[in-house]
Every structure is written in C-alpha cells, then in structure tokens.
Length: 336
Image 1: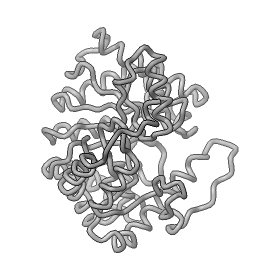
Image 2: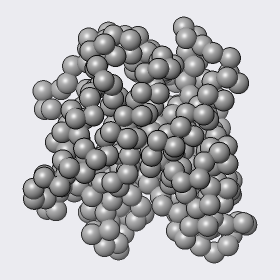
Image 3: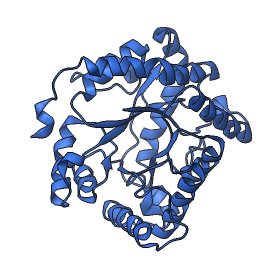
C-alpha cells in the first residue's frame, strides 16, 4: 500500500498568510514530500468557504505535476456533477499528461447545497449525475471523444462515497472505493458483481484522520485550535441552503474522543509506531491501495506540518510493512 498526503490549502483568518505565499509554500511541501519518499500527494475540493478551501484541485494538481517526478497525484475528491463531463475529462487528461501518467482521479457527490447552486447544478440528482458523469468521462477517454487523451489507459478512478448507496455505485462503475470500511466493503463488492465486474478486482483507499508527531500530547495542544476551526466549519457549512438548524459548535475535547466502537476520532495525533498498529487494526483484511494522511490542519504551525510529512514519508512505511506482515489471516467478514 502507498502512503500519501492531502492538502486542502485552507488559510483561516486567525493564522492567515498572503494567499500567494500559502500556495507557493504548499508547492514546496509537495516537492519535499516527494523528496522524502511519499508515494502520493492529494487535493480536495470545496467552494465558498471563508478560509479559501481549495476550489479547483485539478488546477493545483497541474502545478504540482510540473514540480514533481515520481509521486502519484490524486484528487480526494473532485465533484463531477458540478462540471460538464468533457471539461473534467480534458482537465484530468492534461494533469495526467503533465505528470507523465501519475494521476489518481477521485470523484464524489458532495453534500453542500450552495456549491450546487453556485454551478447551477441539481443537488437532488447529485448521486445520479455523479454516476452518469463518471461513466461519460471514461467513455470520452476510451473513444477519443476529447483530445489529447491521458497517458494512462485507464486512469485509476476512485469513488469517494461514505454510504451503502455510494459504495454500490462505485462497484457498479467498476472503480475503486475511496473509503475504508469493513461494513461498506460488502456493498462495494455487491456493486461490482451487479456491474459485471470481478469482485476480486476490489480496491479501497481513504483519507485517514491521522497526524504524526514525535510527542503527540505536545502536538495536540498546538493543533487543537486549528482542528476546532476545521471541524466546525464543516459542520456549520454543511447545513447552509437547507432548513436544518445549525449544529452546536464543538470543543477540542469532544473532537479528541474516540467512539466507543473503536472507530476513528475526528483526528488522532500518533507516533509512527502507534499509527502503524492503529491502521492495521482498522484496515486488516481489506485490499488497501492508498493510505492518505492530512498534511496540514487549517493552517497549523509549519514545523508540525514539516515533521508530519517527514514521519509519514519515511518512518511510517516500514512500520506498516512489518505490522501487516505479522497481521495474520484475512478477516472473513469482508468476503461474505
């Protein structure tokens, strides 16, 4: 399995840098991640966030493609229902060409009404439109419907879905599932069979809510304000454009609590050794391709970002290899 880092380029007012500096520094961090041995750098999409959350991940990915040589360049995710399929097919093909064939295209439906209104798209049909547009993008590439086409034949496609309906959709489309869940894996495999695809071709990846640090307790105290901003912005903006009440603001202590079932907390700051054991616990038996980690939480201190990138890229991979080599048999739940 590969390890990668995700950048959303948030730049909150409380810690704001000049925007050009923020983008330039992130390009440098992507280069540093590659130099330290990371397997991938990933970018994500939102619109109308006050902190300037990255709105066009493939545009930024093209810049990173020109500055790097070996890392996979992924989206986790881009929203195809907000774009004409030909537009997205062309834009993604250019990133693949500039990178020399390193694109991993993750696609999702999104969940915010204002984003769909901004692009004149129908929020009520977001899942149907997402599936239709993914199929059309692939058709355009396979038939030469846009030129130039990508280098990779095919470009790896991933469905960033977090419920049973989305997992089955990813399966029916014959693409990877950009979510690691033993419960949803059965729905994904069922979708593969429904779509006429071999269930043994199943593959999963995910963004894990994990940061690495030498001293997790000390790091937590410094990261907590940034995490509070990140999670509350997600929660508050998720109900915009709906009749739902705004959810209460969360405190740092709540965000640190791990659910009773052992699933991930909102963010876990761990040593590489702790992370390897925790990841094995949550993913054992699944056909994992990419593990993606936050590079930065809402403009957190640069020294923590740099050390996190270093630990993810250099210290974690051999620990994961050792942990999974010792992990034992495949969990029978995932093949039923």
